[in-house]
Length: 157
Image (tube, rainbow, N blue to C red; front, side, top):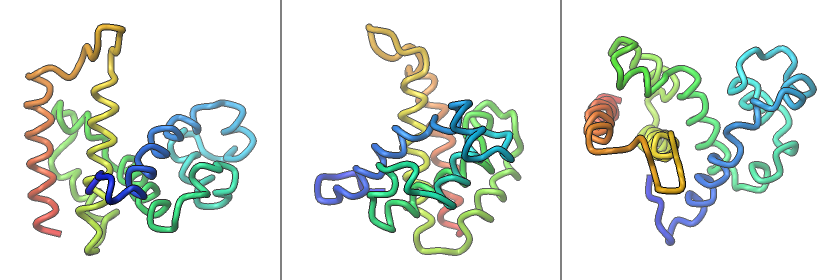
């Protein structure tokens, strides 16, 4: 995904994605708007699909930005990239990602968006005033291996 000034709608969608990602974890939000969802991320996806106006920053995005965010969240629901990097799930679990993406031309944009947000999240792990405590050379190298696996997946999709 191209996050450049010339593609400001994707920059906006990325920022919104980061901002809203934890909304489903708000207990009262989940109980009120997605009482049937045990998983906070699933609660967020359900609300965004059913009543997007409840999340104004998401609602104000263009249709493409909303779709990319929803597809990236659905990818995350079906595939934990952190577990993949730590070999806690099987490479066959990449099939879940393929199912979510289907055979669309936008598959690389969705994966790029998902991976960019995931990378940013990982960079924030253990954040202190001195900077990132997690994303050091070893972790980046591991992330790059996972990124390469996803690039192979995109090539096969």
